[in-house]
Image (cartoon, rainbow, N blue to C red; front, side, top):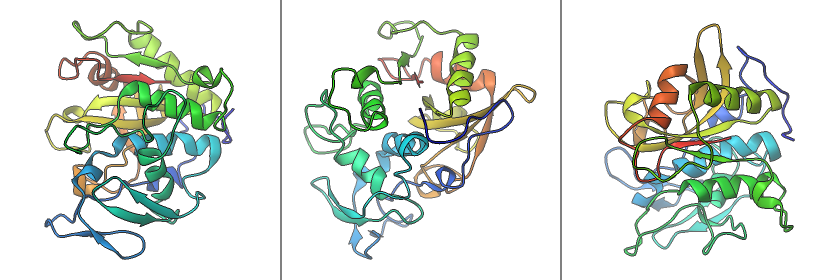
Length: 264
């Protein structure tokens, strides 16, 4: 079970660390090179698509506390060689998840899938689920690692592949409440157009739900994107109407083709 205390309705899971996790920049807002934790300059457009590893790092902190304790190290995606530590904004474990995590189901290490030209193709929902289970299980090598805790529920949109579990709004809420009650966040793939911290633009994006409030009818979540990549803020907490989050994750036609849904 997760290492953090459970949280009932109205009280999100502890967020002192997880609300400060922010993805590394691909470049500075003016297009100039960004700098890693060793002060080395780099430009890597692939880093703009690291919301999957970001949300995974948030979720897994409640299991292993690696986000702020993982060893510092060098990471190379074929474009940039960068060095990251576990000091705020806590990027070493995020980069490990992006480029090096290697569950038995993976053909190549890392949550990120690359296109033939070497560009970032994002994180497939099944790969994110497998990384969560592998890491939460302590990198178990037995046959049960893949079903250790997390299940994938795909977008309900007509035309998308059949879900592993049909979901309506009440089921979605029950799944979130169940996990939060156990101290485990829920990872959601949503359309940024409807997220309150984003401008009106359609992008597939992973966020992590760490609380719910049935009196206010809201969910509380973290967004690791940061101001430079689309969000209006670096880290922090966000709230969204419960019906809205269910709709944009599960019934949004923009998703389609197997995207969208949640992992709980």
